[in-house]
Amino acid sequence: MDEERYEELAGDIAVERSISLPADPDSVWEHLTDGQLVGDWMEGDVEIDARPGGRITMTPEEGQVVWGTVEEIVPGRRLQWSWRTDEGLPTQVEIELEPTEEGTDLTVRETLLPWKTSGLPPFWVDPPYPRAFLSAAA
Amino acid sequence: MRPHEVFAALADPTRLEMLTRLARGGPATATELSSALPISRQAVAKHLAALSAAGLVERHPAGREVRYSFEPGRLGDVVRWAEDVGDTWDRRLDRLSRSIDG
Image (cartoon, rainbow over all chains, first blue to last red; front, side, top):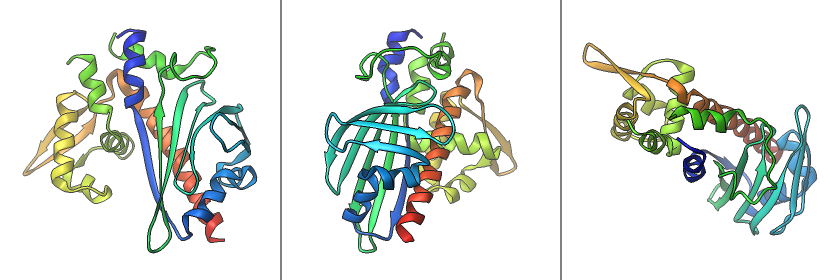
């Protein structure tokens, strides 16, 4: 297992969660794009410039600042950003909204990103997981 | 087992979720797993076969049932990452749901 192999495989490792919300997609959307409202459920101070290329920054109650770039916005439907977690791992977060009779189904998917192609400035902060990935198949 | 086969076995949110459940809750049967997940017992069995082939779970026949346990090997960190991230989103979505309700 070499670095190149990790780069190739990282995008396949993802965590996914879904929830049904009792509000229409436009109301949910507000909670995803208004920094103040986002901060309420993300447990930290959040600044989000909700447009492609905009900056997203989260200062959690504990731990390091997490920051990244908004990549895709489809109002009321889809929000995507990439950021570097407090462990230094680049990941991509995709949130999709689907209208239902009762309100909105929200699905979030967080995917490990390759280091080199993540589009985030390169810096190496002793990441625990990529090293584990690399050694896993050494 | 070639490395890319191990990663291919992990590269599915449902399989990764099954592994985190086995890692956290201890050994379980396909029936027990399917009752905790929104997929059929047949689908669970299929995923377990893939995980077993990749050496990520071990089969323990017990009477007519088979229990499966998580075998972390050196991939435990991948599962730990998935646990951390999954827990964080569970917590966030719970808060989001409550703030929309309120």
